[in-house]
Amino acid sequence: MSDPTPGSTPDTTPDTTPDTRTARATTDEPSRRPTYGQRRRERIDALALAGTVDDEPGVSLVRSAWNRLRRNPVFLLGLAITVAFVVLAIIAPWIAPWDPTARPLLDEVRPQTNPVPGPQPGHPLGGDDRGRDLLSRLIVGSRQTLVVGVCATLLGLLGGLVLGTLAGAIGGWVDSFIMRVVDVMLSFPSLLLAFTIASLARSPSQWTLIVAIAAVQVPVFARLLRGSLLALRTSDHVLAARALGVKQRAVVFRHMLPNALGPVIVQATLSLAISIIEAAALSFLGLGNPDQRQPEWGQMLGLAQRYISEAPHLAFYPAGCIIVVALGFTLMGESLREALDPKSRR
Image 1 (cartoon, rainbow, N blue to C red):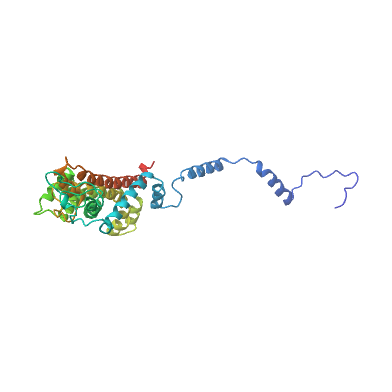
Image 2 (cartoon, rainbow, N blue to C red):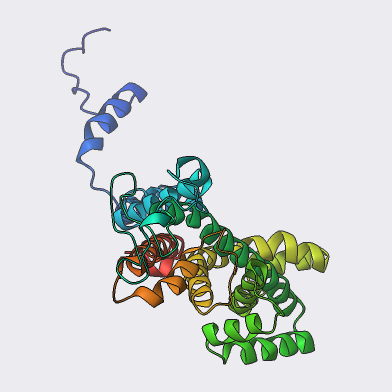
């Protein structure tokens, strides 16, 4: 580049070459303040991150509920009680120290002086008035209690699903008729209604007990499912499916029913505890299985009332088992309700 000639004016025009503009823009960029739009986006991102402390983005409802349940001590306690009860009921015949129908303590039963044998080596809980080992009957009786509770809940759930689906999906006079029948059934106390149904049988048995308890559970499940389906009838995905020409049957069974089963499943867990308590109550009144070769906790309570003053432990042990198992199912059901219902999350 040639030197300026003498007498000429020096060139003071700023250098505007592309390299100079790029360097200057790079130097001035850190000093720029964020715009209002940038600050707003940053604030929204911070709020979004704050709202995903418990619910991670992209996690399903079941996974999100499990993440909360596994940190909930109430749910873990209920789950431990329930699992222990189920495992005990399954392996009961193999771990019972004595045959529940055998009478190893019959020689010690004296109606006048010692009607109920007390605890002794080999029989930690003693025996009953017929010389049968009490611990073995408690262990084996857990299976009958589980069978009655689970079968009654499943039958009630099945009947409630049928009635609730018909009422919530079809509507009209079908809905009105089913709901009036449900209202009549719900107007009676559950135990009184179960007692009435069980007493209609010619001879009490385990299956009459199951049917009576299941009939009491049907209106509860039907009303709950019907309410969930009515709430989903005006949801966006159901309206979109109908606008696309999807048949009514597919709309109900593919878009509405799967999304309405959450509260019903939670109610089924709570109903297990209610079924066990009602089964014990009906067996105590003599409406259960009369065969004493198949022990059941409610049946044992009924047999113990004759000796409640001399041997209260005959009623204490089966009553304690019923309370603990019902408490386990209740704790687990309430925790599931809180985890699956966004309105009741802590």
